[in-house]
Length: 436
Image (cartoon, rainbow, N blue to C red):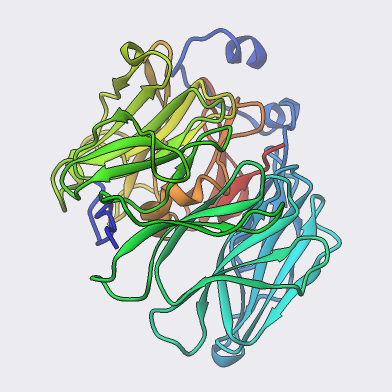
């Protein structure tokens, strides 16, 4: 499979509230007291993996509740949990309970943290990635196969009934997204394991009478996860070679292509929530993270397309309305890390920024040391952002995890206009904001 080199190996990343929040003066950081956080409107909920290994849910003011309580670190008797993922309606979270290397359960809990129930029990899989179908009826599960080296499996289970697990694809690398009408999954995969196995695009039918379709008669560039247009009628794929490709909108049969961009090297990309733009990060020089650039492409007016000046970009995230993009770059040498975070040491220091796709202006949100778990997820940014988001539902706030000044992992919330400093709302890692 043409897997991109986007941080596949260890790469150093470098050494009046309401009035101001709406005034449009970006980057004017202000301290935020505990009282101020309480007065801010609570929008949606934030799910995360707590520092004790359990699943937690909080609001942006720090009103945390524990979803689970039995995580342990006891060798063969270890119990651990995966990071939770929100349903599209924001009413439920899904996560896995892993009992050492022996068995696993997939659970769904309510928005308030209660009502956790098992929807799948298995002694052959270790689930590690989840994605709800757009209508919240199905949950896609990517798992490692227990006792089988380098083997993964994609399956789906009913979010309501549970225990009706269906295998979709197995024994090969797979990157995938849902069709907007929930009738199936579009996957970039292989016929089998091994670097030299041919890769292809498969559309797996899951409901509504849709049948499986395979697109094999196209040459694919270097990428992982595919993308789908907002109406579900077009696939967005890089056609060409691993060095040079044409990011192309195609029909499900692989025909009637329209080239929308010409990325260099490996590419990670996503369609905006409003369907009007595409954001992509390409890497012109293999194994050189410094060449990773973020591009914003207008599907309606090519003249409105542009490249973000800051680089290298290692992750990006569309705002809910498609008007802004949050992105992460390494912090520059000599730049100060915000006081709330750990200072010095051999840490991956990054800067979270936001760019307005209309004005092309960008501004800083926070500079902080990235947690190791967040860093491990960077190469899979294209797939993960289709399943979860760091944006609040109203697009006014961002959530991220960072190493705190006392050396622990913390969940931080910052205003997306850059006017309020990030504040810690919980101890933990891998946060995700509910879609609603």
